[in-house]
Length: 261
Length: 261
Image (cartoon, rainbow over all chains, first blue to last red; front, side, top):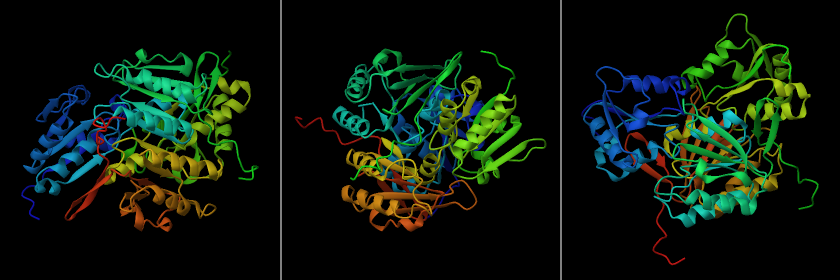
């Protein structure tokens, strides 16, 4: 187990938006990196530092980006890969693991540290109240890497079981109909009044947050920067006059203990 | 809608551990608060500031704590309630909403801001690789506020559907058998080799993280400060010689598109 150089790879969660929504350790890791890899719009969010090299790449190039980063780390550089939100939730951390597993054996000797961040659903939930206050799931609607049939059956499983559902990657230019289809499926199971929170670019200047009822939900409101939280049958809305309403899922469920089952 | 005083309530996510795993905006909110409410061990993690009043309370007093905080905010104070990890995930944000909904009408006029944080499952996932790299759910095993039957049926629903499962509140002195029963249920569906990550006090000095296979999982390893991530049938372990193995769930699923279904 020879380590030629003391390179390293940091997988860094930028959080949902501005610098103030990052953890301190993530900001320090950004500062330390000699080379930073990332999807271009994410790299643009990072304060620039003299002497730090930046390698921006396209949205769909996760595996190539991870490989290039591992090569530089193996060559002795302190390398950072940035990820919006949390790298572990539909982000770069899994791509780095895939690259390591499928790459040359020496890549396994690269020290990898992941710095977690506030993922989109937590940022959106904080804006609207506490919709994730009880059991919930996170599901990506992208069928680029999994069959649509699997997404449908997963949606049916969790909506039947009463989970709140956070939807990531709801829609894109190449995936125009999937969100509408998902909404149709959810409507089969949920009351028409179920609260839905739609957050676009939460934490950034262009943030928009809307609360609607499932019946009035329009897929065309979403884009690639949108996260959607669909309540469970017990999720509630509190109206507050001039203030925005609060959406929350109670911590307790109606008890079944009086039944004999 | 008369606002007698300009009080406010901030619900503040402390993140998993030390100061460096908090967001900057959460640290600023802690600093601003004139009165801080919270479960005593969480309050102890917050740097003290002269002139800031602190009200520590017991673990199970969430609703009373929320009510006391709302009263102080209505009286014109800038009040903070702290929550470990993220307040929106089995934390104080839902308790605050419940208090507002069931309380006097004037509580609805209190400005409430939630500062999200890195929740336990994200911190644990970052330590071990990327187990939450694909669809996952978060479920509390506490049957204090919901019937155990509902927990069992939810576990069956998500494990059948291929979700990775993050378990919160796995065990306590008053709930000694539930985690063992949950493990039995999961073993009915998952391969014995399914990776399980067990993280205790992740991010704090007393942190311990272990990776085991489902077959060798022992409920007695967990306590109230533990979060557990149970992989899906496609979650993998990468061995790395001297370095800790990586646990990750690939972003892609085997395609079913060649089948005729």
